[in-house]
Structures are given as structure tokens and as C-alpha cells.
Amino acid sequence: MKLHTRLRRTAQRTHDYDGAVEQQYDERKFRELLVLVSGRLTGDDAGGATKLNKVLYFADFAHVRRTGQSITGAAYQKLPNGPAPRRLLPVRNALVESGDAALEEHDFLGYKQHRLVPTRDADISVFDIEELQTIDDVFSDLEGMNGREVSDLSHEEAGWRLTEEGETIPYTAALIPREQPLTPAAAAQASAVAERYGITI
Image 1 (cartoon, rainbow, N blue to C red):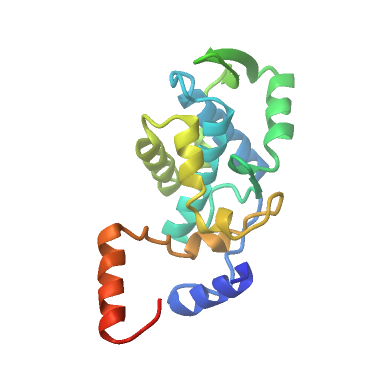
Image 2: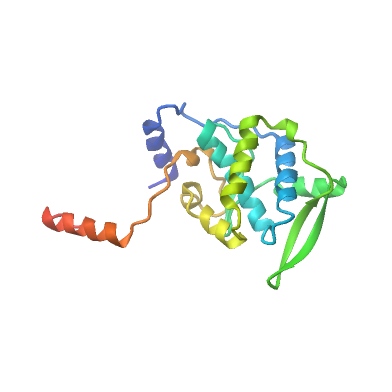
């Protein structure tokens, strides 16, 4: 089923949905979120670029589910390792050029990680209380997970599953319910019911 069809059907089932999740990109908020997240990942051995991208994504999309609005309005594209913000590299490079952050190379299990290490604290005054709570909750939910695990988790998101590589993931995809896995017990029960009523599945 095409993404826009899924979104339309989801919209019809969502009472507080106004037809579109309108987002205005705020580069100042995105910059400060990048500083905040990269700063909090400094002590995380698995906190390389993959996990950084996913924390940013989950913060924005979780906030859409909670409030109908993202935190930064940043555009996220589908990449093989999961969603990533399109403006990440320009904003990261600007932070490095201004001296607000440094780009460091770390070794993790023999792999090279490129980490953004802030030289200043994030200006959290650009966020409201609800946004800061969402950011904290995302960190709590992803605590202890490595880059591969958060990447796999992002692949369960409807927006990642229903877009093509390189496409922008629409914020409305946050409103599509996550599909539940089919367990062996559920599959057996479905087969028994289908057999009883002569249904082919």
C-alpha cells in the first residue's frame, strides 16, 4: 500500500488529526538539539554517528506522536542504517567551524566512530518543557542500546518501511500505528480459526 494511502486512512482514524502535520524547520532548535544530544552521548561508548542520528529522529517523531508537532521541523531521509536528518552535515560543520564543537575519531570494538563533541552547553532555553521531557524520555528509552540496536528499532518505524531510500520521511508517518509482530502462538490461533471457518490465509 502506498505511503499516502496509508497516511490518509490513518488520518481518518485519528480524531485530533487536522489533515497534515505542519512543520516549520527551525535551524536554531536543530543546532541546539544536535549540541544537546551529542553532548549527552559523549559518555556512551556506542554513541557514534548512527546513534546520534536515531536519537534526533526519535525525539522529533516521538514529539509528533505526543503533541502533533515536531521539536525542530528537520527533514529526515531514509538511509540504509535508518533515518538521518538532511541538515546534519551542514549544521555539524558550522558548529565545528565556529569552535562550538569538535569532530573526534574514536575506536569502538575495532570500528572507527566519528563523534561530534561539543565545547559548550546547549542553549536549552529554545525548548519548551514538553520538548525537554520528550528528549529525556527518548534518551531513557534508548539507554544501553548500541548503534545497531537503535538502527534496527528505527527500521520498525512506518516512515522508514514505507519510503524509498533517499526519500524524506513525512512527519505524518509518525501517526501510523506500529505493526505488531506475529508470534507463533498468534499464527497458530489464526490458522485454527481460519480452518474452522474455511478461510484461506
